[in-house]
Image 1 (cartoon, each protein chain N blue to C red):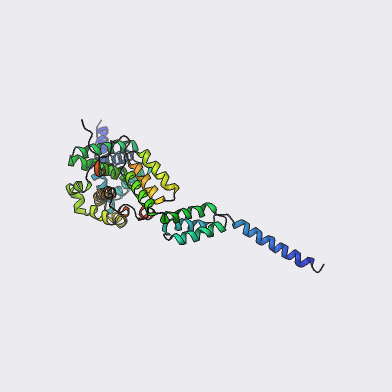
Image 2 (tube, each protein chain N blue to C red):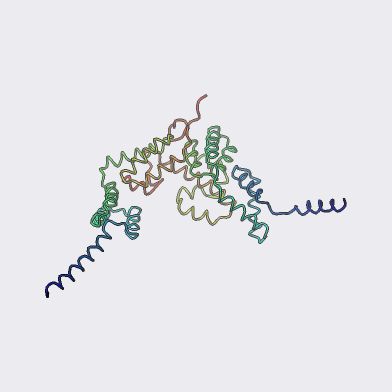
Amino acid sequence: MGLKLFSWFRKVFASFGEEPTYTECMQLVERSRQGDQVATATISMVRKNAEAGSEKARRSLEEIKRYARSTSPNSVNAGAEAMELRNACFGEDIDKTGMQLSKVALSDPNVAMVTLANSCNVKELAGKINQCIQSGAFQRTFKTPGLFLELIKKADHDTQHALLLGYVMGMAHRLQAVRHPKTPVAVFSCEAAWELGQ
Amino acid sequence: MGIVLPLIVTSVGGLAWWRVKKQKYGKMTPDRKKLFEEALKTMKDPVKLRSLADTYEKYGLKAEAKELRKRAALREAPAAVKEKRTEVFKKALDSTDPHKVSKVADAYHKIGAYGAADKLRKYASGLVPGTPIVGSGGVQHPPKT
């Protein structure tokens, strides 16, 4: 009896500080994709520990990356989330808009860009979301999207997330701008502008 | 006999030359493909595009020559046509119907405006089906209840 109790305690204590199992990695990725900030922060922490040299964290990170690369975000969910984003924009709920935008941008930046461009005044929205203004992503994207994509690759994970939102909003702003009859098409695409004779 | 031997040598040489020429005629070699793709992306001068199209046609690559001529024709279109195309492009980017946008994209693809067609297709793929009609300035208004 004593031996059984001892082995149970040993098991329980051994489980503390254990690396996430494969199922946990999978759950973390899925929860993060659905906008769970805790899951995103956990992945970020695992990444930092791996960079600091922890062997357990490195193996966990490998599992997380392997799962994230082997599965793509559900497109049906992206559509439903885009509808929620649109409704949040219509409702002018800035907190909900920011959260939904984050979700949609992570699963499909193109859907996020188009939904945003069709649902609200992007310039006004960018003014409200401080995160993007601080990183300067919105302005940089509007000026030079190609150069901005190069910069985003070099940033750390948390900054990348903020920059992605800025990038999506910057591109949505370009899309809204090009709709104006007097705006040159080159604002949206140089190649298309040449083809259309501008 | 003295005339037969040079005749045979010339015939064999001619046949070999004809075979080599025939093998490359009408064939899209990797170099030709690379040059063609590069020209579609970067070549902006209609005169150069037409010149390259003539070269491709000379080597039996008629479809590629046609594509290059289409690109040249885009720039040489009358101002009114260019204006109309720009207007349609902008209207398509203002639409919320993915099917209509795709149709416009197909039309641009047919005339050789591949960049504009790609942009429209990407826009169409980002549209959520069932979104309401666009209001002024390209911004949708919430459905009235």
